[in-house]
Length: 110
Image (cartoon, rainbow, N blue to C red; front, side):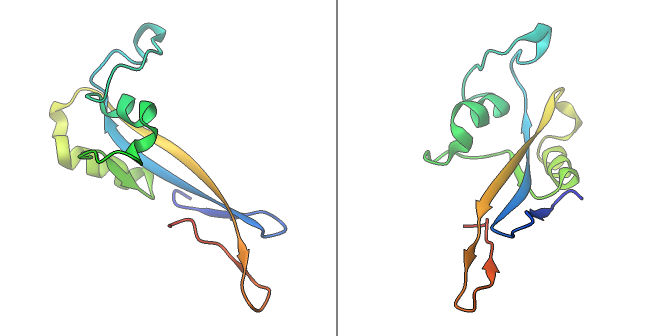
């Protein structure tokens, strides 16, 4: 299951998995390099700036609910000319609220 919602046994929380397609333009990962470069590299921008949530960044990377659609979007944007592409997998766990009837309501798309 690429896009999945997994509820715990007590149904008080839900986990969603999201995929981010990005380009790699630095040496991250080569020869065990773990240094984040700058916002010009798509992967380092995501890692270093917490997905750009608080900044107004022109995102060219994809955000998808399936691994295949993230791959397809990054290929559509950059084609085969980009030598290094990456898909970052994010797990989001959200606590569920109870509605007026006492039933669990989970929404991770806020």
